[in-house]
Amino acid sequence: AARYHSGWERAWKSPQPKKRYDAIIIGAGGHGLATAYYLGKNHGITNVAILEKGWLGGGNTGRNTTIIRSNYLQDPSAAIYEKARSLYETMSQDLNMNVMFSPRGVIMLAQTEHEVRGYERTAHANALQGVKTEFIGPERVKELVPIINIDGPRYPVLGGLWQARGGTARHDAVAWGYARACSAMGMDIIQQCEVTGVRRDGGKVVGVDTTKGAIECNKLGVVVAGHSGVISEMAGFRLPIESVALQALVSEPIKPCMDVVVMANTVHGYMSQSDKGEMVIGGGTDGFNNYTQRGSFHHVEETVRALIETFPIISRLKMLRQWGGIVDVTGDRSPIISKTPVDGMFINCGWGTGGFKAIPGSGWAMAEMIAKGEPGALAAEFGMDRFVEGRFIDESVAAGVAH
Ligand code: FAD
Ligand code: PYC
Image (cartoon, rainbow, N blue to C red; front, side, top):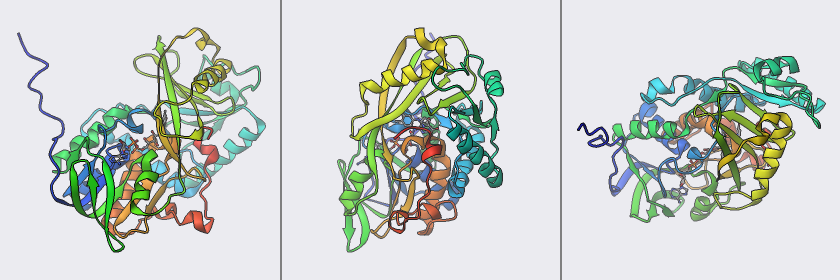
């Protein structure tokens, strides 16, 4: 009989670490892998190791609800999120991997007068930034989402911020696509390899200690999401970051009933339907800092209760699975893409609850900074010195997830 399930070529190699690399990236999540990919593709730097303490894509990359949009308010955010969204448009072709990018459209519901004003303002800002969004009325929302209850008992739907080219993608495939491309360029992805120390000579980084031994490098990129504070402590500096759990859940699969993504930020829940038919659901973060990849139980109840107001038909759905990830949250809800007090060490973190959508843009910007030693235009405003200077990039509304 034909052996269809054997003899497959490995998609990426699984090497032992070399003694030394030009650049080491810590964290084989989407952002770390994208950083390595663009180091090779855009800057010709391929003597690179990506060190991962677990398995690649096993952190927030494989735990998020895959919403992609670029409807942020501030100019630096619009630039990097729209760069990322546009790279998602061609990612399947660029990586020769079907990442199932599905620009089905994203609506952020306005359910208070305050939200109406806020989202109208965002739509105007987006028009100036070249990001295509529009504020739509409740009838158009109902047309796009027939299962929605626009007369909600507490908060009727007053309209929504609609981004027609927002959507979703398959998160694992994004990580796998970048991993395969990095490996093909000769980079080493080393899984089950936890970084336990940052080696410095004077003020300069010279390598890392890991569970597979010491590895030397000229440049170090730290891209570890919820564990950023742990690595920065190893290097002797503090980050303005808090790590909290964010969770999600999926229902049993049902027939197609909703072909756009809906975020209801006032009642606090969001939902999309996966290609398998499951309703993919999430809400807010835990109210306390922690490192458990699980999340508190009451969030499940609160999130589902909120969504039932907006989508009464889900009241009899059975929920199948629940999980959580540790997200890295900054005070202004914008990321940090920055040089650090250690020469040659760069950090990319603070994407919080919203970094899946940013993966390609973030990797592009981080790679440029590592290659050139200075942030380029996309990263320039996201330095960590902004917290000392009070130069915040406030995106608390656009984050769309309470925290
Ligand atoms: P990760 O995938 O977490 O990668 C970091 C990696 O670093 C991990 O694999 C980790 O194991 C590794 N690491 C940590 N410490 C070490 C060490 N010492 N040594 C070696 N390796 C180490 N964003 C959106 O845009 N849209 C959404 O719909 C969305 N929904 C979300 C829903 C949930 C439930 C969660 C948890 C997050 C969601 N996000 C969403 C946010 C998004 O997932 C994150 O912002 C983004 O994935 C973080 O970047 P990353 O992918 O590189 O992180
Ligand atoms: O950033 O769009 C987002 C998001 C939705 C759910 C979690 N994050």
